Length: 437
Image (cartoon, rainbow, N blue to C red; front, side):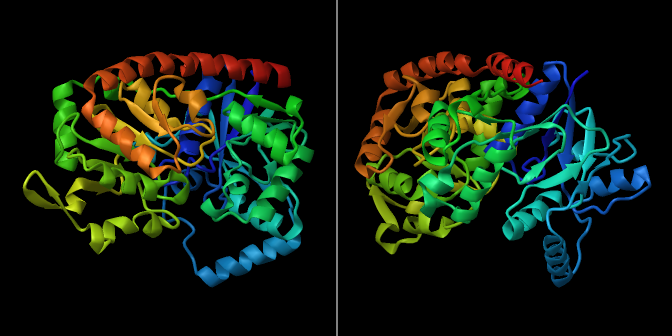
């Protein structure tokens, strides 16, 4: 049986991201294709000869905590030594550690491995030396599929890298990435990678036109979304109770945005457009505040917009915009199902998973007419120029008032989502892996 390794770089995060969802779905499809699935993590647990201690350390979120200055000195020392090989150790999962708390975050796997701080250390080495580090696995995989542009590889193995987008180069003002280093990493990976994977034709064109990767070295597999039936098919009455309990808003009586509060997501214009629309329907926002979030949310704190007169009563603007820092996946699915419409006027997306999630759940979508979103949404969404606040506002008013349009978008969305099923994604992966293996 061929063995495919993926990284747990994003899977180890406390809160999910789109790339973590991609990696988790990828792990399941690798298993469904009949390959042995290995996952490499990079938590801070020091290697141990005792299997039980490796298992305990893997599930211990406090493992490796130490003096920050000592940690910086150690990283500097390892960086000076250059991109030397990292060594991974197997993590036995025997059940001796009760790990059910992590079950929703764990991918599908046959083997789990950990190399101490391997992702941070490889990035530190790349900053200093501009080289891709090697990681030695206890069992050499037949293929290493890195789900993110990480400066790591397994020697004497075909290494492929998923590049979701090049937002740091296309929207440099929207990310904290060191742009020159990011560009140099992509160019270096182009020299060592067997192949690249991306998730939309938009991203593929960017990689060809801007980074200069040869077209035959990039395959667009798209990606899929698969929401478990126990969440997707909950009774409407239960969904309504969960929605009201979390937001104090009624079923199908709020607009919904979910995702990181950051410049790329265009939150500032979305809020401005929503407030200008003067609709009564509340806006629910689910997402952690990220870089520059205070700028994106500054309109909510503006005294100029502190109160609005609606139907002879004055209500606080903050009552119209309901913010949740986090929602577990089961609640998030209910919030999507219970929304009048999903708002996703992002400035740029490599794929735009939230739009697809909403369509799969039958929720009407308002999204941007730029980047990859037209590919994903097709004719099943109300599309707007994300830089045109007036157009976003008008679209919100239209969706709020037109029940027939919402029903039609819901119907089209369900049909459009069928183009991105796990089966379709699996076929795309199978063709790629067969070619490389």
